[in-house]
Image (cartoon, rainbow, N blue to C red; front, side):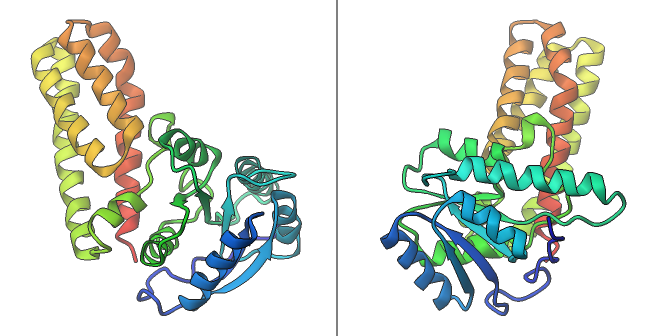
Length: 272
């Protein structure tokens, strides 16, 4: 698999860069609308109709970003995304020590169900976009996806954090990068404090204090959209509430990794 280019939007003002985008959708009307919206945003589009054609196009050279529908014939969006990530993993193995930058992938779906969104992110997509596509949301999403780090391990976080899609937070704050930076700084400080308190409380067997710390982390993680990490905090909170210290301690290592991963993604989202 060819080596991806570094993100052309990193450190660039919004709307100042033209991306080469590979767009895959079997639905002619949705394909036309997406193409026109992308072109109006100043991007260049190559069209294909299914996942197999995506993989064939990637053999000829890598775009800046791939947008693909989850529902496609021949090879659907989930299978295609997995195949892209598997190719990258094989390329990383062959080229040890090289950057092996990650190709950004945006999944598109008309179903807009939480389960489908989670499946797409678990398969390796960087973000999800609901259809019909809103132009303003599309522009904000592309800005964030291309601002995130694209190193080969950038999104390979622990199991409890792989669902974290920072684009949802960006939408909530209407692409206010100053606010994103403040949120990232506050999260780093508060999560570090709550996590330290949680670990110390569990070591001392003070389960009420541990429950309070887990509760604080759960609320913050849920607000950021890190649902699986938030669910882990909820499980620890429940375990401490029922005085099950063993269960809480068993969950702690993966939860610490999950919080660390969310913090790194938040940091990287501010490195424009």
